[in-house]
Length: 464
Image (cartoon, one colour):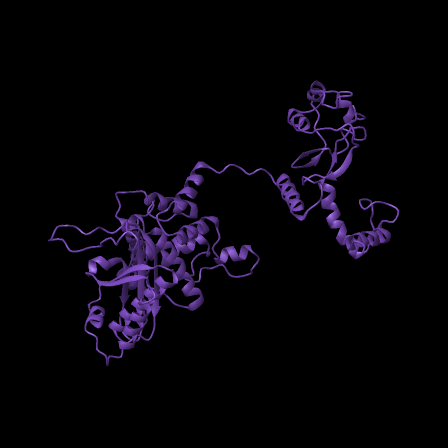
């Protein structure tokens, strides 16, 4: 059976360029005009492959590649002969380049490109695709040519000023979570969907700030100059800029905050809380715009400070048990092939969600993983503790951790296991926990003092 691609080519040739070549055809049909778009790209990527050089005109034919195929540039002081062929640049009988003549004729840059071309006297010159080793077109090489063409059309980028470079580096090295580093990047990049940015994208909306009704809602206004944002910043310990008010520039305000992060004379709550403050100000703006909820600036500050404190606690390995009898037992390291999972719970009342959290550390005290979640319809503090413990056990199993020590500081949880009440409504949950623990190779559940379980308890409290 004939090659289907070959049959298609024959049909197209008979229909569209019966008496010419593909590169010369210009039939007006819709189908053929669609093919011509590909032909334009093909023409850009064709280059003359030098063989004996007899049919290639030096100044007319594209026979060198510098990002894209082109003709070479002549040396300014050289005498240009428009009829010269490539074979006139070769040593007779040898086929190597006449180095002195090439250097006298072309610019130094193009001379270096020409010296890398290897002529072959036994082969005629031919037109080939210049962006693959086998000289056959591929979609990837076509894309590479398009990228190179766009780069050549684009004006050269001005170098980034040193101050701006320093700010970008400070953002990616900021002492905060990866999510908030990315959020800081979005702020500086202008990638937040405030009204001013939406209007610049063609959405016809009123750009007046919905929160304060005073001023245009751009990124700097929402995070620094809106009355709500200013209330949050004034409650915090973060120092204002030297002028006593926020700048009219996101760049300058972020530069000031990143500078504050390096001031060791400030307290941690003043020095390191700004990424969380920016995040919660932004979330409060969204809550007002989309849920019509007006949040209290003091609550915003409390949330930011608590989350910053939790993050700092997670970065510091817990202290090992000290031999001094007068000191309380803090965190003790597990055996070398074990991990330790501290479990926390927070319960306020049966009508609101309670919080659960766990944090996993290795024998050196390094935090490996941590998580938190909310539970609904929880009637008692004991049920909240049992829900958190069961969830942490199931999480460790799903992570395929085999030797685990679970630690909790809940006294009522300890009593539920040591003094079980078989008619208690929580007894089925206790049995379920014991059954789930059987899936581990080795496990222990231990009760510790609250100081040893402080971080897990703080994370759980952040839910409520």
